[in-house]
Image (tube, rainbow, N blue to C red):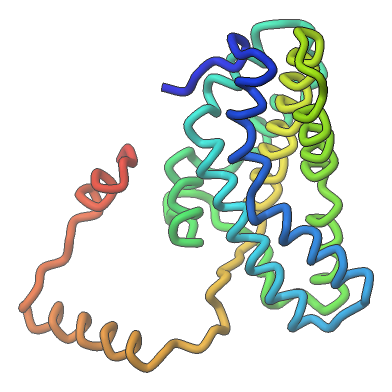
Length: 231
């Protein structure tokens, strides 16, 4: 069970936040910003966006466990009314189920039972793709993260702890908004990558084994159970 951050001291919260705000996503964002400033070509942007997206998935997995606890904190006080309104907008606009969001992070494919994304990233025009990269690179999540990192270094006090909690909740809502925004985009980070010969050979052998009856398909319910997903 996720620990309630309202019970944490400044030092405890700062320690708990470190694996959340010290992730590859934030390094990738800096590189993406540099590439955009240099007006680099699409191939370089696509390569870096692949890293950015994988970093986002890592952050999503990190925030998955405490999500309900954080939402409960937000709903517990009128002090967070502005954040509550933003969460309500996200929840009203969401198209995917919780299981669908988990599946997409693991496989980059939405569940067939969820609405399918309408915008395929790979077919965007160069200008459209660059505009999308600028949107991601300038998302409020990154400014919120910088405020958190600065507050982690502040002199510990009750006031500093409360400010750190508030900034993290703002960061969390920015993350929810990013997650919801991504629902409209069909993006596979492996699309267009060359399949190594040894991997292709194993895949072909797996297909042949299945078709010959040598191996049996694993039911989706069993896969979900192994992954800790509800089905």
